[in-house]
Image: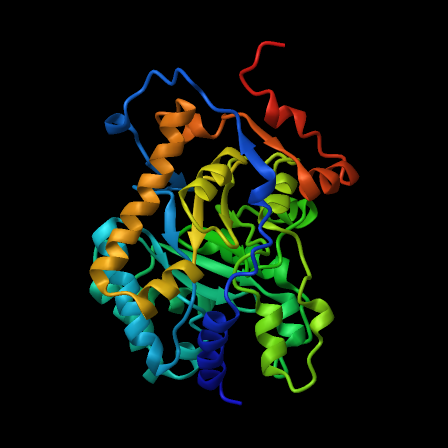
Length: 353
Protein backbone atom coordinates (compact mmCIF):
# COMPACT_ATOMS: atom_id res chain seq x y z
CA UNK A 1 0.00 0.00 0.00
CA UNK A 2 1.25 3.51 -0.84
CA UNK A 3 2.08 5.99 1.90
CA UNK A 4 -0.69 8.32 0.63
CA UNK A 5 -3.29 5.54 0.83
CA UNK A 6 -2.16 4.74 4.35
CA UNK A 7 -2.51 8.36 5.43
CA UNK A 8 -6.02 8.50 3.99
CA UNK A 9 -6.85 5.33 5.93
CA UNK A 10 -5.58 6.99 9.10
CA UNK A 11 -7.89 9.99 8.62
CA UNK A 12 -10.92 7.81 7.97
CA UNK A 13 -10.26 5.41 10.84
CA UNK A 14 -9.45 8.25 13.26
CA UNK A 15 -12.92 9.65 12.60
CA UNK A 16 -14.72 6.31 12.88
CA UNK A 17 -12.89 4.91 15.92
CA UNK A 18 -13.20 8.15 17.90
CA UNK A 19 -11.38 8.88 21.13
CA UNK A 20 -10.60 5.96 23.40
CA UNK A 21 -11.71 7.80 26.55
CA UNK A 22 -9.07 6.16 28.73
CA UNK A 23 -7.17 9.37 29.54
CA UNK A 24 -7.71 9.16 33.32
CA UNK A 25 -9.02 12.70 33.90
CA UNK A 26 -12.20 11.32 35.49
CA UNK A 27 -9.95 10.28 38.42
CA UNK A 28 -8.69 13.86 38.94
CA UNK A 29 -10.66 16.40 41.02
CA UNK A 30 -9.81 19.97 41.99
CA UNK A 31 -10.14 21.44 45.48
CA UNK A 32 -12.43 24.46 44.87
CA UNK A 33 -11.73 27.98 46.10
CA UNK A 34 -14.82 29.76 47.42
CA UNK A 35 -12.91 33.04 47.81
CA UNK A 36 -10.81 33.33 44.63
CA UNK A 37 -10.40 37.13 44.87
CA UNK A 38 -9.66 37.49 41.12
CA UNK A 39 -11.48 38.68 38.00
CA UNK A 40 -12.23 36.72 34.83
CA UNK A 41 -11.19 39.69 32.68
CA UNK A 42 -7.66 39.77 34.14
CA UNK A 43 -6.68 36.18 33.43
CA UNK A 44 -3.59 35.30 31.37
CA UNK A 45 -3.33 32.13 29.31
CA UNK A 46 0.21 32.83 28.12
CA UNK A 47 2.68 29.98 28.35
CA UNK A 48 6.05 28.83 27.03
CA UNK A 49 7.30 25.71 25.29
CA UNK A 50 11.02 26.12 25.63
CA UNK A 51 11.73 29.42 23.91
CA UNK A 52 8.36 29.50 22.13
CA UNK A 53 5.86 31.96 23.59
CA UNK A 54 2.24 30.81 23.20
CA UNK A 55 -0.81 32.99 23.74
CA UNK A 56 -2.86 29.90 24.53
CA UNK A 57 -1.88 26.57 26.09
CA UNK A 58 -4.08 24.78 23.54
CA UNK A 59 -2.50 23.89 20.21
CA UNK A 60 -3.52 21.91 17.16
CA UNK A 61 -1.55 18.70 17.40
CA UNK A 62 -0.09 16.72 14.51
CA UNK A 63 -2.62 14.99 12.31
CA UNK A 64 -2.15 14.75 8.60
CA UNK A 65 -0.43 15.65 5.34
CA UNK A 66 0.94 13.79 2.35
CA UNK A 67 -2.41 13.02 0.75
CA UNK A 68 -4.60 15.25 -1.40
CA UNK A 69 -7.44 15.40 1.14
CA UNK A 70 -5.02 16.65 3.79
CA UNK A 71 -4.47 19.94 1.98
CA UNK A 72 -8.04 21.02 2.64
CA UNK A 73 -7.95 19.76 6.24
CA UNK A 74 -4.64 21.47 7.00
CA UNK A 75 -5.82 24.70 5.38
CA UNK A 76 -8.87 24.80 7.64
CA UNK A 77 -6.86 23.90 10.73
CA UNK A 78 -4.36 26.64 9.90
CA UNK A 79 -7.19 29.16 9.59
CA UNK A 80 -8.46 28.23 13.04
CA UNK A 81 -4.93 28.51 14.42
CA UNK A 82 -4.46 31.91 12.80
CA UNK A 83 -7.76 33.36 13.96
CA UNK A 84 -7.46 32.09 17.54
CA UNK A 85 -3.71 32.44 18.07
CA UNK A 86 -3.00 28.74 18.42
CA UNK A 87 0.23 26.96 17.58
CA UNK A 88 -0.13 24.10 15.10
CA UNK A 89 1.86 20.98 14.27
CA UNK A 90 1.58 19.25 10.90
CA UNK A 91 1.53 15.51 10.35
CA UNK A 92 4.64 13.53 9.45
CA UNK A 93 6.38 15.18 6.49
CA UNK A 94 8.27 12.10 5.34
CA UNK A 95 5.81 11.64 2.48
CA UNK A 96 6.69 15.05 1.02
CA UNK A 97 10.41 14.53 1.55
CA UNK A 98 10.11 11.42 -0.62
CA UNK A 99 7.65 12.93 -3.09
CA UNK A 100 7.97 16.74 -3.44
CA UNK A 101 4.62 16.95 -5.23
CA UNK A 102 3.01 16.44 -1.79
CA UNK A 103 4.75 19.47 -0.26
CA UNK A 104 1.70 21.66 -0.85
CA UNK A 105 -0.37 19.54 1.57
CA UNK A 106 1.91 20.79 4.36
CA UNK A 107 2.99 24.15 2.97
CA UNK A 108 -0.64 25.31 3.01
CA UNK A 109 -0.33 25.73 6.78
CA UNK A 110 2.34 28.41 6.47
CA UNK A 111 0.57 30.05 3.56
CA UNK A 112 -2.66 30.42 5.53
CA UNK A 113 -0.92 31.37 8.78
CA UNK A 114 2.25 33.24 7.79
CA UNK A 115 2.99 34.70 11.21
CA UNK A 116 1.82 31.93 13.53
CA UNK A 117 3.76 29.23 15.35
CA UNK A 118 4.02 26.22 13.05
CA UNK A 119 5.68 22.96 14.09
CA UNK A 120 7.29 20.49 11.67
CA UNK A 121 6.98 16.75 12.20
CA UNK A 122 9.04 13.64 11.44
CA UNK A 123 9.53 10.18 12.91
CA UNK A 124 12.46 9.27 15.14
CA UNK A 125 14.16 7.50 12.24
CA UNK A 126 14.85 10.86 10.59
CA UNK A 127 18.33 12.30 10.08
CA UNK A 128 19.55 15.81 10.79
CA UNK A 129 19.49 16.58 7.06
CA UNK A 130 15.86 15.45 6.76
CA UNK A 131 14.94 17.45 9.86
CA UNK A 132 16.40 20.61 8.34
CA UNK A 133 14.50 20.01 5.11
CA UNK A 134 11.22 19.48 6.97
CA UNK A 135 11.71 22.73 8.84
CA UNK A 136 12.51 24.64 5.67
CA UNK A 137 9.46 23.18 3.91
CA UNK A 138 7.03 25.04 6.18
CA UNK A 139 9.36 27.63 7.73
CA UNK A 140 8.76 25.88 11.04
CA UNK A 141 9.34 27.37 14.47
CA UNK A 142 10.03 23.97 16.04
CA UNK A 143 10.37 20.30 15.11
CA UNK A 144 8.19 17.59 16.57
CA UNK A 145 9.72 14.09 16.48
CA UNK A 146 7.09 11.44 17.00
CA UNK A 147 7.53 8.05 18.67
CA UNK A 148 5.12 5.34 17.53
CA UNK A 149 6.72 1.97 18.20
CA UNK A 150 3.50 0.04 18.83
CA UNK A 151 1.82 1.59 15.81
CA UNK A 152 4.73 0.57 13.58
CA UNK A 153 4.70 -2.97 14.96
CA UNK A 154 1.00 -3.35 14.22
CA UNK A 155 1.21 -1.67 10.81
CA UNK A 156 1.51 -4.30 8.06
CA UNK A 157 4.09 -2.16 6.27
CA UNK A 158 5.59 -0.69 9.46
CA UNK A 159 9.15 -0.55 10.76
CA UNK A 160 10.57 -3.43 12.76
CA UNK A 161 13.89 -1.90 13.78
CA UNK A 162 14.11 0.92 16.33
CA UNK A 163 17.82 1.07 17.04
CA UNK A 164 19.53 4.42 17.41
CA UNK A 165 16.43 6.51 18.06
CA UNK A 166 17.74 8.23 21.17
CA UNK A 167 21.14 8.96 19.61
CA UNK A 168 19.43 10.44 16.56
CA UNK A 169 17.19 12.64 18.69
CA UNK A 170 20.20 13.84 20.68
CA UNK A 171 22.11 14.75 17.51
CA UNK A 172 19.15 16.64 16.07
CA UNK A 173 18.42 18.49 19.32
CA UNK A 174 22.06 19.51 19.55
CA UNK A 175 22.35 20.89 16.01
CA UNK A 176 18.99 22.34 15.01
CA UNK A 177 18.38 26.07 15.28
CA UNK A 178 14.78 25.54 16.46
CA UNK A 179 13.45 23.74 19.56
CA UNK A 180 12.87 19.99 19.40
CA UNK A 181 9.69 18.47 20.78
CA UNK A 182 9.44 14.70 21.18
CA UNK A 183 5.93 13.28 21.08
CA UNK A 184 4.34 9.91 21.75
CA UNK A 185 1.42 9.23 19.44
CA UNK A 186 -0.97 7.84 22.02
CA UNK A 187 0.72 5.10 24.06
CA UNK A 188 2.01 7.29 26.89
CA UNK A 189 5.47 7.66 28.38
CA UNK A 190 7.01 6.24 31.52
CA UNK A 191 9.60 8.07 33.60
CA UNK A 192 12.54 6.14 32.14
CA UNK A 193 11.84 7.37 28.60
CA UNK A 194 11.08 10.88 29.82
CA UNK A 195 14.35 11.00 31.77
CA UNK A 196 16.33 9.85 28.74
CA UNK A 197 14.82 12.60 26.60
CA UNK A 198 15.51 15.23 29.24
CA UNK A 199 19.13 14.12 29.42
CA UNK A 200 19.68 14.57 25.68
CA UNK A 201 18.36 18.11 25.82
CA UNK A 202 15.00 18.20 24.03
CA UNK A 203 13.05 21.40 24.65
CA UNK A 204 9.64 19.80 25.24
CA UNK A 205 8.09 16.37 25.69
CA UNK A 206 4.55 15.54 24.63
CA UNK A 207 3.63 12.52 26.73
CA UNK A 208 0.87 11.51 24.27
CA UNK A 209 -1.13 9.26 26.57
CA UNK A 210 -3.82 6.79 25.65
CA UNK A 211 -7.32 8.18 25.63
CA UNK A 212 -7.40 9.96 22.30
CA UNK A 213 -6.92 8.61 18.79
CA UNK A 214 -6.00 4.95 19.21
CA UNK A 215 -3.40 4.05 16.60
CA UNK A 216 -3.29 0.44 17.77
CA UNK A 217 -6.99 0.11 16.97
CA UNK A 218 -6.55 2.01 13.69
CA UNK A 219 -3.76 -0.28 12.51
CA UNK A 220 -5.69 -3.34 13.59
CA UNK A 221 -8.56 -2.18 11.39
CA UNK A 222 -6.14 -1.90 8.50
CA UNK A 223 -4.43 -5.21 9.19
CA UNK A 224 -6.10 -8.38 7.79
CA UNK A 225 -4.58 -10.20 10.78
CA UNK A 226 -5.61 -7.95 13.66
CA UNK A 227 -3.73 -8.09 16.96
CA UNK A 228 -6.50 -6.49 18.99
CA UNK A 229 -5.02 -7.64 22.29
CA UNK A 230 -2.81 -4.54 21.92
CA UNK A 231 -5.72 -2.11 21.57
CA UNK A 232 -5.34 -1.15 25.24
CA UNK A 233 -1.55 -0.90 25.23
CA UNK A 234 0.16 1.97 27.04
CA UNK A 235 -0.23 4.51 29.83
CA UNK A 236 -3.08 6.97 30.14
CA UNK A 237 -2.51 10.70 29.78
CA UNK A 238 -2.80 11.23 33.54
CA UNK A 239 -0.53 8.29 34.34
CA UNK A 240 2.10 9.70 31.96
CA UNK A 241 1.92 13.15 33.57
CA UNK A 242 2.38 11.54 37.00
CA UNK A 243 5.38 9.60 35.69
CA UNK A 244 6.91 12.88 34.47
CA UNK A 245 6.28 14.41 37.88
CA UNK A 246 8.65 11.91 39.45
CA UNK A 247 11.80 13.19 37.73
CA UNK A 248 13.78 16.41 37.47
CA UNK A 249 12.80 17.88 34.12
CA UNK A 250 15.66 20.40 34.20
CA UNK A 251 13.68 23.04 32.34
CA UNK A 252 12.17 20.70 29.75
CA UNK A 253 8.51 21.62 29.33
CA UNK A 254 5.68 19.09 29.24
CA UNK A 255 2.83 18.86 26.78
CA UNK A 256 -0.26 16.83 27.63
CA UNK A 257 -2.15 15.12 24.82
CA UNK A 258 -4.33 12.08 24.50
CA UNK A 259 -8.10 12.44 24.63
CA UNK A 260 -8.51 15.93 26.07
CA UNK A 261 -12.09 16.99 25.39
CA UNK A 262 -12.74 20.32 27.06
CA UNK A 263 -11.29 23.18 29.08
CA UNK A 264 -11.50 21.35 32.39
CA UNK A 265 -9.25 18.59 31.01
CA UNK A 266 -6.86 21.35 29.96
CA UNK A 267 -6.90 22.80 33.48
CA UNK A 268 -6.25 19.39 35.03
CA UNK A 269 -3.32 18.85 32.66
CA UNK A 270 -1.75 22.16 33.68
CA UNK A 271 -2.23 21.29 37.37
CA UNK A 272 -0.41 17.99 36.75
CA UNK A 273 2.63 19.70 35.28
CA UNK A 274 1.90 20.43 31.62
CA UNK A 275 2.79 23.79 30.09
CA UNK A 276 0.53 23.24 27.08
CA UNK A 277 -1.90 20.70 25.70
CA UNK A 278 -2.24 19.23 22.22
CA UNK A 279 -5.58 18.34 20.68
CA UNK A 280 -5.91 16.45 17.43
CA UNK A 281 -9.14 14.44 17.28
CA UNK A 282 -11.21 17.35 18.58
CA UNK A 283 -9.96 19.63 15.81
CA UNK A 284 -10.21 16.97 13.10
CA UNK A 285 -13.88 16.43 13.90
CA UNK A 286 -14.45 20.18 13.95
CA UNK A 287 -13.22 20.76 10.43
CA UNK A 288 -14.91 17.64 9.08
CA UNK A 289 -18.33 18.32 10.60
CA UNK A 290 -18.70 22.05 11.32
CA UNK A 291 -18.72 25.29 9.37
CA UNK A 292 -15.69 27.50 10.01
CA UNK A 293 -17.52 29.96 12.25
CA UNK A 294 -18.75 27.08 14.38
CA UNK A 295 -15.15 25.84 14.64
CA UNK A 296 -13.99 29.25 15.82
CA UNK A 297 -16.83 29.41 18.33
CA UNK A 298 -15.82 25.98 19.63
CA UNK A 299 -12.28 27.22 20.33
CA UNK A 300 -13.74 30.21 22.17
CA UNK A 301 -15.73 27.78 24.27
CA UNK A 302 -12.61 25.74 25.07
CA UNK A 303 -10.88 28.90 26.29
CA UNK A 304 -13.98 29.93 28.25
CA UNK A 305 -14.13 26.54 29.95
CA UNK A 306 -10.47 26.86 30.95
CA UNK A 307 -11.06 30.36 32.32
CA UNK A 308 -14.04 29.18 34.36
CA UNK A 309 -11.78 26.64 36.05
CA UNK A 310 -9.05 29.24 36.60
CA UNK A 311 -11.39 31.70 38.33
CA UNK A 312 -12.98 28.96 40.44
CA UNK A 313 -9.50 28.02 41.63
CA UNK A 314 -8.21 31.56 42.15
CA UNK A 315 -5.54 31.16 39.47
CA UNK A 316 -4.76 34.33 37.51
CA UNK A 317 -2.10 32.65 35.38
CA UNK A 318 -1.28 29.18 34.15
CA UNK A 319 1.66 29.16 36.52
CA UNK A 320 -0.71 29.62 39.45
CA UNK A 321 -3.01 26.97 38.00
CA UNK A 322 0.00 24.65 37.99
CA UNK A 323 0.09 24.73 41.78
CA UNK A 324 -3.64 24.11 42.33
CA UNK A 325 -4.52 21.21 44.63
CA UNK A 326 -5.93 18.08 43.02
CA UNK A 327 -7.12 14.82 44.51
CA UNK A 328 -6.48 11.70 42.42
CA UNK A 329 -8.52 8.57 43.03
CA UNK A 330 -9.95 5.57 41.24
CA UNK A 331 -7.88 3.29 39.06
CA UNK A 332 -5.22 5.98 38.66
CA UNK A 333 -4.61 6.09 42.42
CA UNK A 334 -4.33 2.32 42.63
CA UNK A 335 -1.89 2.33 39.73
CA UNK A 336 0.15 5.18 41.30
CA UNK A 337 0.51 3.21 44.53
CA UNK A 338 2.10 0.36 42.60
CA UNK A 339 4.46 2.86 40.93
CA UNK A 340 5.40 4.37 44.34
CA UNK A 341 4.00 7.81 43.40
CA UNK A 342 2.91 9.80 46.46
CA UNK A 343 -0.32 11.54 45.41
CA UNK A 344 -0.65 13.50 48.66
CA UNK A 345 1.79 16.10 47.39
CA UNK A 346 -0.76 16.99 44.70
CA UNK A 347 -3.67 17.04 47.16
CA UNK A 348 -2.02 19.18 49.84
CA UNK A 349 -0.50 22.00 47.82
CA UNK A 350 -0.77 25.37 49.60
CA UNK A 351 -2.45 23.71 52.54
CA UNK A 352 -1.41 24.35 56.13
CA UNK A 353 -0.25 21.08 57.58
